[in-house]
View 1 (tube, rainbow, N blue to C red):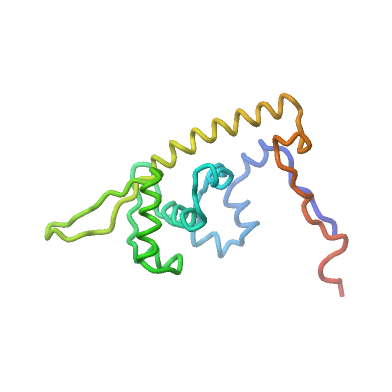
View 2: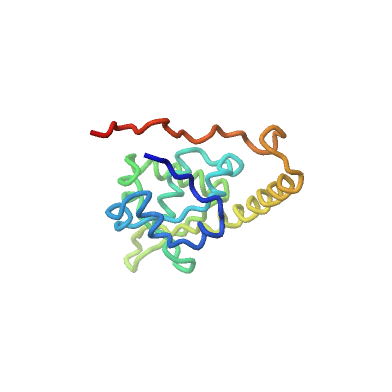
Length: 173
């Protein structure tokens, strides 16, 4: 069995149907249940944002409920805790840290009987920080591209070559 290398043509990858690509990667039955778009810069610059792993997981869960730019997410702490597998108190602490760092705004909602509903979470401060980091990343990539620098320059990390087995994992019968 011969292994195909992914296309290095960025335009071809960007113009391909995302559902086709996702179905090929994850399987139709997985993608049929939905997926969440996460900007690479969020994952690449997690440390620059000061995000701890638990905070990133919570941000990812909030992104799951942010379906359109004009409709902010409002999952309950119970829903978030159930999805993550932790206590509501732990979710509350992580949200408090995200609010304290200025990445997320928490907006209380009350119903007529002065009872609390789930909070609304505004991720626009995070988006603004990501835009700034994206500009830095783009500038760094521009410098790297202009200088022709490679991993040896220290400007970009050296990653090992992708694993490609020399023979199929399963011997043909």
